[in-house]
Length: 159
Image (cartoon, rainbow, N blue to C red; front, side):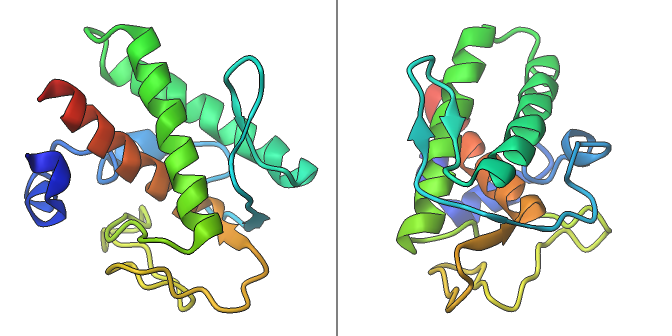
């Protein structure tokens, strides 16, 4: 399955969301983003995904709400409830990756032309190498990680 093969998934960058700059162009809190404090995903009764830090969660909600709208617009033939469900699960997976120091998104785009996110604290080739980052991540990196997980779930859904 393509969803289980990151190398093969990268071949399809023209079809994947983590490489789609139309999703991140103009996205609130994305460009020149500052570090936010992440945590394990908190899932509220309404199903929404939150971060424990109040200030970070406010920025996170603004960004994720805009991103979900862009994804719904990108896939007009897909049921919006399916997109929302996959997107929420992608958020949970991304935040849990961060909080639990598990494998991270091996690709990304900084939206500046080199099609990769670079951060000295991260090993985007596999295991998370954050040391002493005090649970901080740039919104840009978190968006890319969410989109990476969304892609994996979307491809699995279509299979």
